[in-house]
Image 1 (tube, helix red, strand yellow):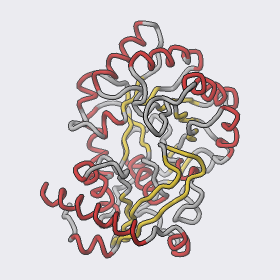
Image 2 (image 1 turned 60 degrees about the vertical axis):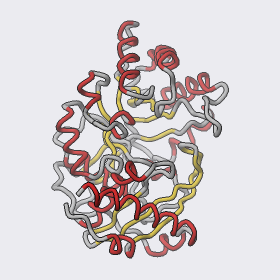
Image 3 (image 1 turned 90 degrees about the vertical axis):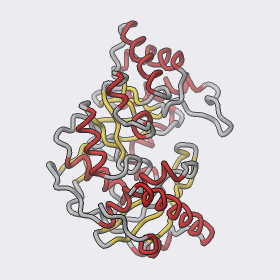
Length: 341
């Protein structure tokens, strides 16, 4: 795909700040830059700590969505999991209620870290209680956990062994790195714990996204459109990896989630519910109605992502300083893409 001129991208930029219902990934406000392109809307949501080389893939995904039509879908309905942040077990029911009826799968966040690093005190017991509460409320749903690489191998094996009776669908990125993933997977099998291991950060952050499959470190991969550079590149990675894939979001607005739905809609096989329900974690979105699952599923977006509502866009628009900060990020990421040719 041809890279559009930097000035054209900047002229189409809208930076928004969305308040979160609960703390998620350590933040209470999610900022993203939206691009109003000739083919629709794209989203550039690289997290603030990401430097230009990594952020450039996120910008490539935004440019693809804004300047090029989405691939032809193979399905019109995308099953979606609910997401439970690292809340107290007593708060789980209220979180699930935001997703309405028809929940068939739930992702539970575990291994929460404090603001200065390190696991939150009592985290292990809180994690166990949270997961068990989900299982009690939804006895027939698929339950998966996501540690965001927050455990050591010993911690991961300990907690996942303790949760063996829950019948987890899989454990997502329990530890950092490919070697540690393989170690945890092997130790669980040695203990007779059948919980499959899913790779997320080890796919989207590794220099070679296919290294996980080559190392036999995971049973499935989690793919996200923005970190992998767009729908088409993510689909190519899934095809090359040869492992079952779960399509997920990166705490996206409805614009970004529609890109994930486009990827899920075009894959030849979709064996697991997708992690595309995170719009429910925002107090406000930019699309009305928000791109949220109904009866446990999202529709495929068609030829383009949904357009933000102008009134909502104005309501959540970031201030001038943040607009300038994001514009600088776009300049740096665009320079990386230009150098790559």
